[in-house]
Image (spheres, rainbow, N blue to C red):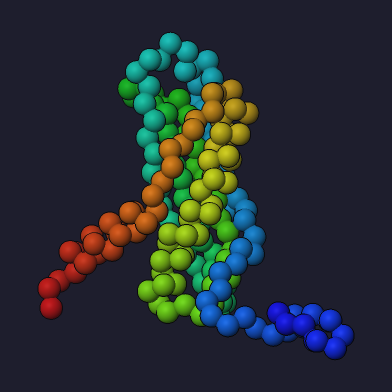
Length: 161
């Protein structure tokens, strides 16, 4: 963005130099809640434990826009009984320009999920409260460590050349 020194008008048609990352929109793509026994089923279940699965998906929308999906599955179990199951796809559309392939992969798999995670936490807490359960404060996630771990696992799984 630049301005004309004579008129002071701002020219919004100029493009910024260098890499760009922008949030276009953040939304829930899919949300499911099941509570087979209702909240009363959780009464007196001191042995209940939470299982959490987390995944990241990326889809290219066009040349510089990407949809990033944070997929969460949270299950509260008491031995063999499922007390509740939450499945959430928290998504966002992001503008990413001027990045090499390595930097783009890091932005889409580390920075974008980090932006989405607080929205997913809030959605899960709200849903559980509306379902009659206490909110579940999901712990913070280090997406950089998860990304580095996935890269290392892929590298080790690849046949030696």
